Image (cartoon, rainbow, N blue to C red):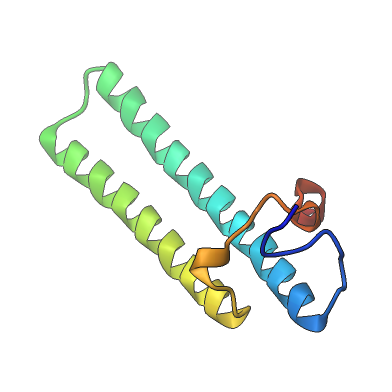
Length: 102
C-alpha cells in the first residue's frame, strides 16, 4: 500500500506521532457520530410520536450543527498537534486499526 503511512509501525518518531493523531481523529469522528445519532434518534422519536414542533426542529438542527462544528474543531486541533496534512489523511493503514483504539 503506498499511502501516507506505510505498513511499518515505528518507522520514525514522526510516523508514530501521525499514527497517534489518526487514531485520535478516528475516535473523535466515532464519538461525534454517536452523539449525532443519539440526537437524531431523540428527534425522530419525538416527531414520530407527534409531539415535535417547529421550535423542537430548530433545537434539533442547532444540536446537530454544534456536534458537527465541535467535531471539526477537535479534528483540526488534533491534526495541528500531530502535524497531519489534510491531503494525506489515510485511515486504511493497519497501524490505525480498530484494535488500536481500545
